[in-house]
Image (cartoon, rainbow, N blue to C red):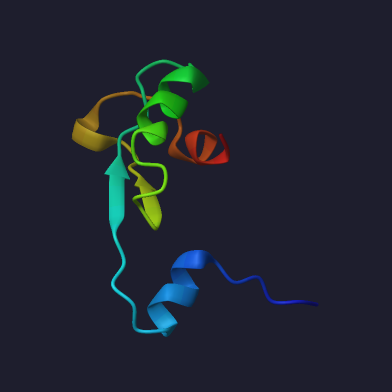
Length: 68
């Protein structure tokens, strides 16, 4: 079985500076909102952290948002 390596893993192992961004999923199930938020950082962030239950308010599942 071939090992899968992420871009983030490769950058960290190479000793490179990485830029990560934390994004809160929308309160709705709208994938367009996720795409809009992520399009603003495309090409700048090396990795994205989609928070889970930020500020204890109900929002789209962070797992669902990460699949978009």
